[in-house]
Structures are given as structure tokens and as C-alpha cells.
Length: 76
Image (cartoon, rainbow, N blue to C red):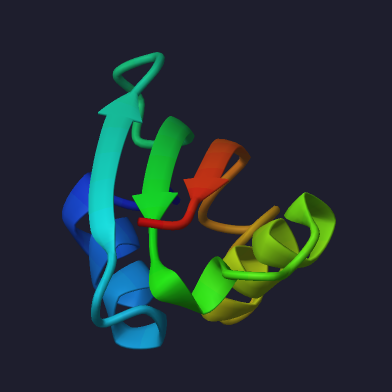
């Protein structure tokens, strides 16, 4: 079972309402994405913690509906 880019963006925007989100489907299968997220919520946090917050926003779907997610996070 795959996750659409729209569904992925919905989870991310729920956790980071101010975010600028760009999603690319890397394999065309809805299972491998690259995602760039710019949010004030990341300010002052180490990159590992930023990525953990994004994974947390996916509510357990990472490794289930979503196989691979290459993340790039930043602050505005």
C-alpha cells in the first residue's frame, strides 16, 4: 500500500502549518519521495531532531505506507 504525495503533504502541513513543502515522487510508485520542508518550527533544532519531528508527523506510516523519504529541512 502506497501513500500519495497529497496525503504525505497533508500529514506534514497538519504538524507544520507554516511550512513551505515541496514533494518529489522519486520512483513514480508512491513509495519513494524526496521532501523539502521550510518551517519556523525547526529553528534552533539540530537536523536530526528536525527530521524526527517530520517522521513523527507521519503518525507511524514511515516504513508501512511509505518506504523511503529523503528529507531536507530548513528554517525561513
